[in-house]
Image (cartoon, rainbow, N blue to C red; front, side):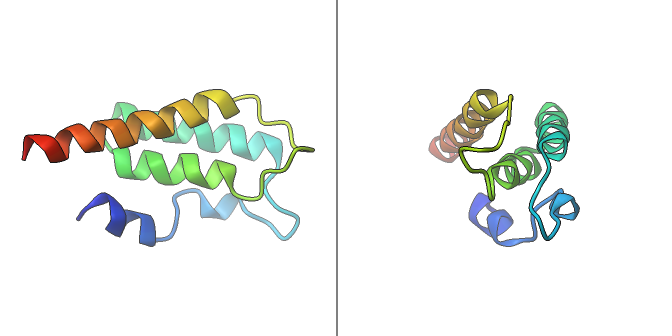
Amino acid sequence: MGLEDEMRRPAAGAGFMSRAGMLNDDREALYVQGRQFQQQGEPEAALKCFLTCLQGLTHVHSFQSLPDCLHQIAEVFNHEKKCILLV
């Protein structure tokens, strides 16, 4: 299953969402979960977590890990690109 197929599946951490949106602590916890997936060699699951962290984020939210989260998203895509080039 490719990265695009994984992106269509429900996001890991979707349970963090509520009617009012995701709380800041939930975003941080989901980011940490994404890092754990990444360290376990599961980039698709990690990417889902990272992208879910960004959903509903506005300028009034405080997401301390935002720069790191964006960097990790870039890392996952860069890694996937390298894997595709090797095939």
